[in-house]
Length: 577
Image (tube, rainbow, N blue to C red; front, side, top):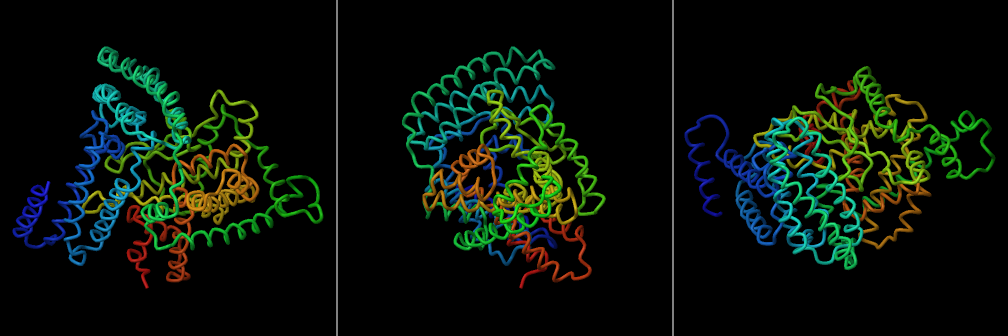
């Protein structure tokens, strides 16, 4: 390993010596090291590589054995030392940022290996559903080639599940229960989901026959093991604890904001947003409810009454996907008409969320990997499961009513994630580092800012603003519960009360968010912190631009640098103090 890195240094020196004008020696060295690291990453995480658009390892599943994880940590230490040896002041501004992004990613990889050690307690890491689905969902290669890779990955499922049995010791019960649900979705994908692809390629049915049978048998046995063996001994604590959560948060946010400052800001914004909702509810109440506002009505009661009225306009499982399609068309036309930001030409498709991915969220934006951005984006929505009671389904659609569905479409698609990621894919650095390691803080910060932008621009009237403010309450409360659950022992009851009484969430939504907060520590904070930072950058840009400010000028420039951590954008936008 050291020999490989030494050779990389020598090659960089030789190339730069004969180059004359052009990249410096240090820049060539950085590019070589970064590209070699990414190649090693693709080999170590082949499923992620497929999703990114690198297809060198489409026929492999990850090796989660302890020797393989230890070797990966050693390789990260070697690359860290080599990258540290490159003087950052000898690099271009873009390479300097990407060097820092890569070093922080390596630091997180080592923190995760040495302190989190998730493969020993997180059964969700062993779900092979995405490994199969990622080969089928997009036509990045002819179907026969992709099905050959599917067959190869199916053959390796027993080994992956064997690693799970060897590694998993004392998971938190919420992780094991979620793994049981997702495992059944993966069984259904392998058992039934492959059939529609084999209709087009019947000649590969025989090639897939044995791997499918063996994979289904292994997954079925594994599901029984999860339920009968692992779940009864799943007594681990899902809470990270104050110190580990704080350190993980630093990596998740890559922000200068401290946890205490984030919590204080969120608590102030919770009150300010509630005040605005009460003002809006008071103005809407007479028309929406057909009577004057009752005297002395408590503000929470007033807000809840208007929100309940809005929730009467709601989709069903049969209509939600088509309704989202219509909303997307109208919202896209509005963004174009108001010239808010350059609208991408790349295709977007609204799909039903695959079963093996359900359990943590209602919707997501699945953009093509940054290494093959010409493929379509998927905006996935999860209708209610077939086994839900009518009462539970009705509660779900009260939460995701017509106006909230519009807000969700803004966030996930236009001008949210879909638009932002397509802008990011146009950025070209000297390496793909920034594309591979995009900042969740920037990505979620932009999507929540996009909701706010649509209100400011006049979309949807007071009904949409009311739901957008409710969604803002959600991102604020997300940051509060993320911190208090993992650092202060916040109970499920207290979290549910906060979400339902101060956030006006339906019980099913709050229950799902509790599970997500348990499963995805620190991720829920990225929305609020990202929103704070994007808005702070816009305020500084406004002060600089003055009367010359135009939404599109600012937004196109902001989105032109890929998706780096927001703290880097001040220098790139010439806003640094």
